[in-house]
Length: 228
Image 1 (cartoon, helix red, strand yellow):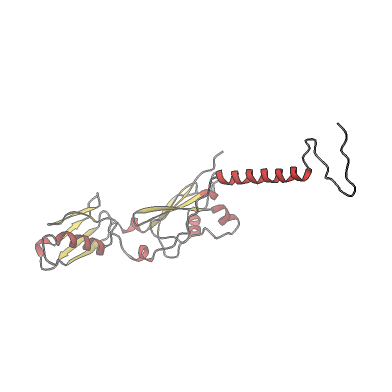
Image 2: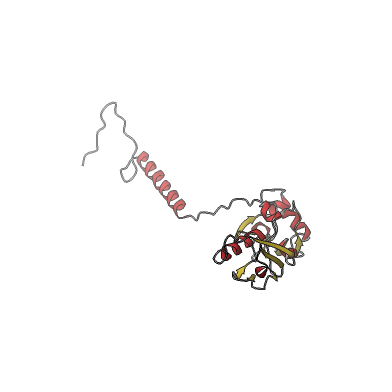
């Protein structure tokens, strides 16, 4: 084989040992890298974002019937159907004609509407009123709680304006084994429990208030221990 002769005035690019130009090798390397990055992003787990919790004024102001509460259920112009009864341990009450009705977790108005619906099968236009005469369960309903790796796990009466930081301070802070960055605020609303991530390390040590959420009755803050 004879060595190739270069035409006058024409420059050729240096070649790699395989005969490919360096620029082509560079392009292929970049393309391969891009494909790898794309593959990594495709298979990487996506974190689930949860919207910050908001305080429901209804949860603060409206009373929810609870187990042990004493109720006065009145049916207008039907004294035989009107009763004074406690809410049973299963959360239900027994109402004449209407039968067993779930009462716990409902407002008095919601319960009255449910009873009205049942009595409508027997009466024309029944008018039902429900009054809580002894709110025995109110102390437990209107509490906030902190559990786990804190100095003093505690259940406290809710006070309007309380925040996550208030609850941690009332528990005398985290203990030496706390994984504060992985704390969770649990909130029950409309029968559903939602978990909100809370970074107590940022809150307590760096003054970052992003997760210093306002509390509402029945909130539970859980602080896990570190995994060694």
